[in-house]
Image 1: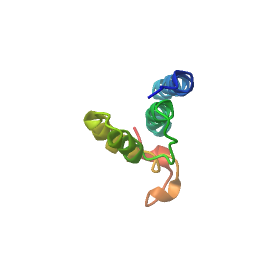
Image 2: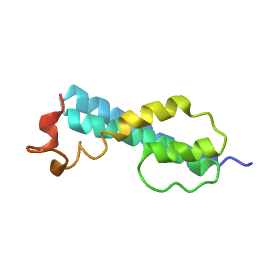
Image 3: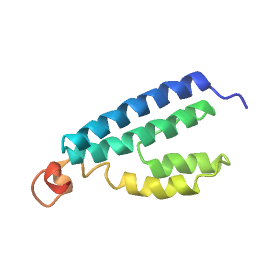
Image 4: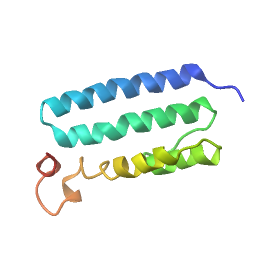
Amino acid sequence: MVFDKKEFDRWIKQAEYTLDSAKEDIENKRFSWACFKAQQPAEYAVKGLLYGIGSIPVGHSLIRLVGRLKRRGVNVDEALRHSRLLDRHYIPTLYPNAHPEGSPFEYYD
């Protein structure tokens, strides 16, 4: 199997950039954005790996994306545990209707 390192590197660079932005959000007490942005670099990294091995990723669920890696024979047990946590913060950090009242930023500290 040929690995597409150039495509993988593009996705990893974006993951690193977004993770840096999440760290800035923590410093600025923008915790809902920091949580959302914590999920994003993980998604970019997994998608980069999938593209690298020649698989086209679809969707935003880390659990599903990591599951595709598992089906390809990649050991992802620890990644699945982290994916469950990160996926829980994908929607609630963005949308007010994910909460009974108020806005997402009011629920994260």
